[in-house]
Image (cartoon, rainbow, N blue to C red; front, side):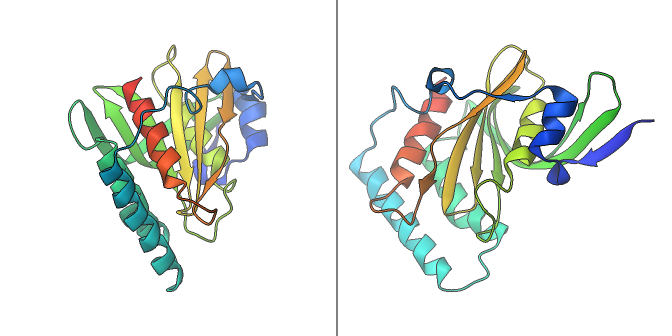
Length: 205
């Protein structure tokens, strides 16, 4: 009998046991967030400084919900990365499904946002409300990335709660993933700068 799981309820152990997913800790596996990052213009930096100030303003008026994260943080980043313009387009609340090899488990869900170039998944985005830890949506995002119909090229993801940002890279054959360093808006400086640089880099790929 087939067991159906909701993506928001799966954990890393489920993905390991049912789909053979493995964490790769070799930094060479995921160089895309570390090398050849494009330079930002002064106007882009000024815009990101305003976004960061908006984040601090939102913190004064809890609860800081998922929709607030999408509007105040993600939308400006997507705009600056040119992901609203051709050749890219955005889809929201896209239904996904992955099936284990023995077809005993089906994981279904609805990802928050996906950036596409034609039919290629450029970036899968999962946002959480501010109270979630950075790891809270990790398995959920990986489940969505495993549903990517592309089997040969890597799939990239972004996990954020509005304060913390992490990028993921997934290869499907065999299922392997790696995670970038964590970028946090509470740190000194503006860590939206490297976040945007990485998003632009992934768009170039």
